[in-house]
Amino acid sequence: MSHKLGLIGYPLSHSFSPTYFAEKFKELNIQDSEYLAYSIDEIDKINEIFNLGVTGLNVTIPYKEQVIAFLDELSAEAAEIGAVNTIKVENSRKVGYNTDVYGFQASLLKQLGDVKIGKALILGSGGASKAVRFVLKNMGIDYKIVSRKKNYLNYLNLNNKIIQDHKLIVNTTPLGMYPHVDNCPSIPYEGLTEQHFLYDLVYNPEKTLFLMKGESAGSNIKNGNDMLVLQAEKSWEIWNQK
Ligand SMILES: NC(=O)c1ccc[n+]([C@@H]2O[C@H](COP(=O)([O-])OP(=O)(O)OC[C@H]3O[C@@H](n4cnc5c(N)ncnc54)[C@H](OP(=O)(O)O)[C@@H]3O)[C@@H](O)[C@H]2O)c1
Figure 1 (cartoon, protein in one colour):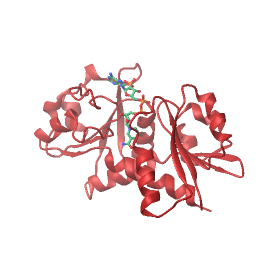
Figure 2 (figure 1 turned 45 degrees about the vertical axis):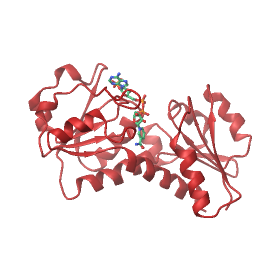
Figure 3 (figure 1 turned 135 degrees about the horizontal axis):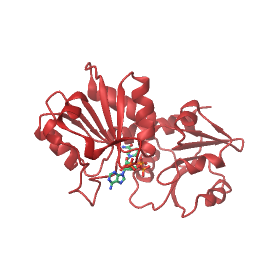
Figure 4 (figure 1 turned 180 degrees about the vertical axis):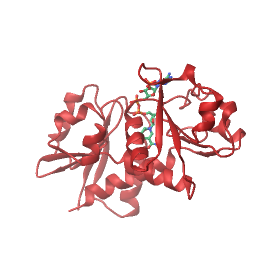
């Protein structure tokens, strides 16, 4: 099966996926396929990319929600979350999927092992936060969203007691991402314990300041690297399904 694949987003600099799939084609000795980065400054330009005859696309910031208007069908997960990161084009029908869900769930299960988490805090209310919410809901973990926006728990209202009551804390904000490595979400880190699990969706740097603070408190930490690889593998599986 030959593939004409790509990634859309803006801006696209040093993206993970083009290198990942170039390596995959090499490993599997696939010579008639490509995975290109399409940096488009307006979502309407996706039509020019569809006209090139692509068979599949990944979608990244800032188009995961806007892209839905250009698709014919959504998977049940993508429809419920309202965000798409993978598109498959088959007989000119464009179907949207969300593989961040699979990537987050599989990597979280690996981090937690046998530990049952009662309550979680999700830092940030953007696109990735929606995928994280979907997974925690499915896993029966109660969560609160911490946000700068009204109608959510505000960072200023957090205290040690709230931190101690929520043993899983997931950072879905870009705070701490390279090159702003001195940033981290503003939470009372002194409330962290050895029973806490800190998960950062950021994967560059490998250990963000958020994770370093968790590590200092003896908490269990995980970065976004496994999720990144797992979501890419799930996209690959979807593109190869007959
Ligand atoms: N590992 C992976 O596979 C993977 C997958 C997807 C995303 N990610 C990473 O996850 C991060 C978020 O991606 P996204 O697509 O969800 O982006 P997004 O839609 O822009 O959402 C990010 C959210 O972070 C919060 N935020 C942004 N700037 C902030 C600031 N200065 N202070 C406090 N909060 C801030 C905002 O939430 P509020 O407005 O509610 O405060 C915003 O909605 C990125 O770093 C991305 O690389 C990783």
